Every structure is written in C-alpha cells, then in structure tokens.
Length: 254
Image (cartoon, rainbow, N blue to C red):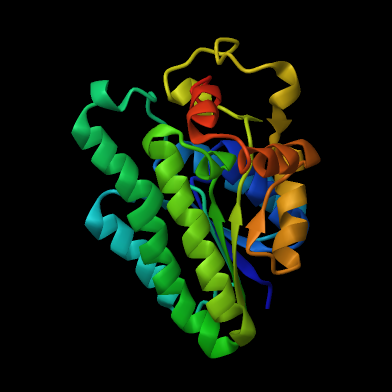
C-alpha cells in the first residue's frame, strides 16, 4: 500500500510544492484547500506524471463542520495517513492596531487552533501503528518579535519541539519547518504587490529548495527545520541581538 500524505493549503505555494515532491517519491495525496479548481488541476497533473492517487477535499478550515470532515479523514484507521503537512495560512499587515480584530482572530485560529486539532486527529492512528510524520509549516518569524504572525509561528515551533520529544520515541515525529522569505504567492495574497516587499534579493528562497531541504530534516526526525544556511545563521544571530533591534529589522516586508 502506498503511503498517504495530507497537505493543507495545497492549491499553491509551498503546499503545492510539497505535493509535487511527495508525489515524485510515490506518495498518494489528500489535497486540501478552498479552491477546488486549483486542487483538481494539481491532482490531475500529479496523477498523470507520477501514477499516484490524489484525493481532493475543498474545505474552508475556519468553518467548524468542514474542519471536522478533515479531522475524521485523519482519524480513519482504515485509510491510514503517513504524513500530515499543516500548511494552510494567510498573512496580515504588521500594524496590529489598524487590523480588524476579527481578521486577527481568524488568523490565530488558522495558524494555531487548526493545526493543533489536525495534529490531535492524526496522532491516534499514527501512534497505534507506531509510525507517522507531522509537519507544521512555521517561519523564521517565529524566532523574532513580528506582530501576531511571529507569535502564531512561535507557538507552532514550541508545540512541535515538545510534541517531537514526546512522540518520536513512539514512532511519530513532529517537525516545525521555518522558512525565510520564499517566492510564492503568499505576499501577493497578503496585499503586497510583487517587488514591493522591501526585502533584498539575497534573502529570498525558492519553494523547491525549501521543500527539498525540509524533507531531509523531516526524514531525520528533527523537531525544527530551518532551510538554508543563511537563515540558520540569521536565527542564531537574532538570539544575541536586543529584541528592539530585531523587531525593527523584522518590520520590513510581510
């Protein structure tokens, strides 16, 4: 039986790239996002190219009954899931005081509550089988003071570190993947036109590299994956710089 990976936010960006690279390794897929047309297009591409199965679930994970559908899929021991990639998310402007607080609450739910619930749903069958991998897409922003986005990603990093320590001895690893600025459509969806992010070119990563490097760390069972040597160095440096300085630097871009 082929191994199955569930990927949220799979219609574009890092989610779609995880789908491509996992399909190339022979994994069957459950692709989750709101955009059914984009999911079906990706599923068709991957089934034709790699001869894998690709199930499409067009769900809004902020709607409780739709979230429960995915929880039930993950908890279904008859259709085992080998890997869960919690990737769904969106960005907001960094000026918290000007943001709509209801948008901030939805942001918190999607980045914290949703992956927590999905992790909980997947853990039972994985622990019963004695194997599985859970991947939480965080960010290097989780290591820096960066409005509520950094706070949400910091929670994911801390949770993943704890969960990996707790469950890896039982065969289930949990990894927080922490990319830096990556060329996807994330920034455009956050309302920032291409080329206006205010980030120097050398700081940008490409999605295929982020995913391939993170998959190596995931396979090794690491609790935290920071793709690229330059971001590993920046995260290390940030630990020794005053928070006020890091916060000013982190205010650039989205």
